[in-house]
Each structure stands twice: as C-alpha cells, then as structure tokens.
Amino acid sequence: SQQGEEDPQALSIQEGENATMNCSYKTSINNLQWYRQNSGRGLVHLILIRSNEREKHSGRLRVTLDTSKKSSSLLITASRAADTASYFCATDPTSGTYKYIFGTGTRLKVLA
Amino acid sequence: EPEVTQTPSHQVTQMGQEVILRCVPISNHLYFYWYRQILGQKVEFLVSFYNNEISEKSEIFDDQFSVERPDGSNFTLKIRSTKLEDSAMYFCASEEEFASYGYTFGSGTRLTVV
Image (cartoon, rainbow over all chains, first blue to last red; front, side):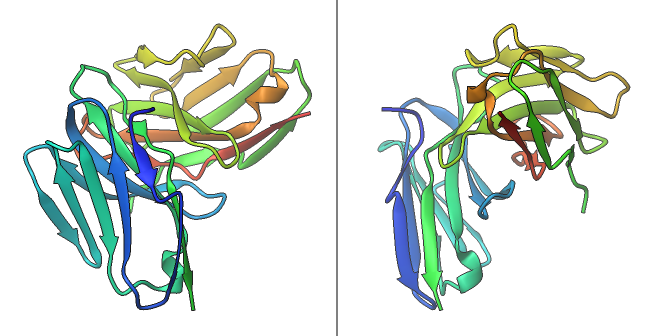
C-alpha cells in the first residue's frame, strides 16, 4: 500500500456531530499535514504537526500523531454543512525527499 | 492573505498540442511545486523547484514535461505533446521554506485533452 492512506474513504454525518478521519503511513516522517479540498477546488492547508508533537488544536480541529503506530487522526468537532469536503493527509518523509506525499483522502459529507 | 494564482482555470486542448500552465507563487516563497489530480483520485507529485532548478521530479514528469521560472514571478509547467491521460487538475504550490508551515496551493487548472 502507499504512503498516506486515509480511512474511512467516505464518511457521512449529521450536522453537530464529530467527524474523525484517520491516516496511516509507512515511512518515518518529519511532519504530517492535513488539507481540505472542496469539490473541484484547490487544497487548503489546515494544520501541520511535527514528529515530536502528539496533539495539536486549531479551532474545531484536533490532530493527533502516533509515530510508533505511524498514524494520525483528524477530529472535527461540532461539524457544519460547510465542512463537507475531502480531507487529505500529507507526509514529509525523513528520507531527504523535497516533496509531501498525499494520501487517498476521506470524503466527508455533513448533512444539515 | 497572500495567494498562489493559477491561470487559466480551465483549458481544453487537442491531443498532441503543447500547453503551458501558469502560476504566480507567493512573492517571498522559495520552493515551488506542481501536483496533479486525476478526477476522483489522489494528489500526485510532479516536480519541485528551488533556486532556479528542479530539486526532485516523479516518474510522471517525463520528457514531455518541463518547468520554468522565466521572470522571477511566474512559474510555468509545459506539456509538450499532450495525451488523453494528461487530463487532470494541475495544482501549483509554494512554500516559504521547505517543511515550514505547509504548502499554499493555487486553485488549480483543469486540463482537458480531447
């Protein structure tokens, strides 16, 4: 499998509920980031968590990173219809590469 | 807030034609990237560019592709002879320093090859 795989692939929840998306990766990383993509649009950077950090918050977003399990989760609390989008994790591997590697994405649908 | 600007937003081209996709990165950013996303699929790395040269490229970025930063502000991706499978969204991104705060992406160019 590939570096950066999100699960679930698709998630449908009611407005007000929390949404949790997970990302697993294969190689050691310097940092991991989450991006949002509205349908047919560009990607928007949400949050970056470094390998020596375990948890980070930004507004209604909470990101965790477990480097021993090579996994991260993105929690969106009190979701809104406007949160409907695809969410991607991206990793910065320690292997000296000059790029981020994106996962396959989770399509989140928040129902009003 | 500073933006990465991409033009055109949508381009339709005939197979075999050359296309140039244009990007204006954020002015104080030093690292530039092109990614592409075939409809409904993952975001794939094409090339990274730093200090006026390619720092890394993927297997997708074959001899048909080239990048340039001709005037210190624009960053272009050229596809010399387009194929049907080049149809995708192409995203430009820039970063002030590598692995600092993450990419700022442009809104993309949808390339349709017919």
